[in-house]
Amino acid sequence: MAGTTSNTIVVPGRFGSYTVTKRLATTFMSVVYKAQNNQGREVAIKLGPRNEIKAEYDLMGQVSSPHIVKPVSTGCYSGPQCVDMPASFYGKPLGYLAMEFLEGITLDKYLRRPNLCHFIPEEVVDQIFKISEGLLPLWDNGNIHGDIKAYNVMDLPRGLVLFDFNIGAIYSIGAQNGYGSVVLGSLGYLAPERHLHGAVPLLSWDFFGIGALIYLLACGKSYLSARDPLKSKEQMILKSRDHDAEYNFKFLSEPWRSFMMKICHHDPNRRVADPRRFLCELEELRRKASDGLKIV
Image (tube, rainbow, N blue to C red):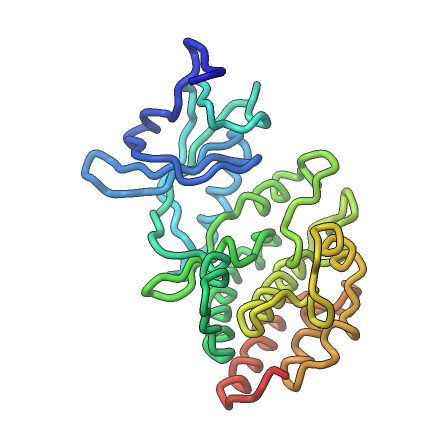
């Protein structure tokens, strides 16, 4: 393969007792592989900077829920450089995180299906409530997931399951916007202040992401395109920075409008900040949504 050297391989052969079977994904933060142990148990293996991997494992260990991916083990990687490792890995000690292997479809792929039948709103709120309930110990410890979005939620027979705590791990080790000027997170799920370099993490960032996800699943589109279709990434960045809750949510019916105004308000001081109050608001929405109330 072009660009390889005698010290470079295509994929790692092993991580501890796990044998790699295929590469699943590569981002500028990590590489994820499918692997199995000596007994044939399949796991997903995330490879990344050692301090971030250890921090992510610790965050995952704070929660226990069938709706959140389960960690299995972690360790150091000292093998050769792989061709699919991002440039951000160079010169850094690397570690790996083994977690349960989720075999399903992520919600972003589900939403791109042709002839899509959208989620029933009350089912959306019920499933997201279960994820949120599972995250409560994390929030009680002052930590965040940091990247709640459709891409990081998988639809499985046991329900929706949240994974990828990488951004929360970066914030937990004090690396504010840990990749220089890069804003950590995904457009369409970011509270406006997250676009400010060096912004201090807030628990309400997770609540905001959850509200944006509920809106997406219930309405089939981003709250940023509430009135005008988004035509470019640049327009999405601008709308995300200049998000105006009064404008974006004014056409929603109750109780949806009140919930979104409390959870996804552009002013963090007017946004629900306490985890238990957030769960109460979500529980109230779940109760009312079960009555079949229309979103618009």
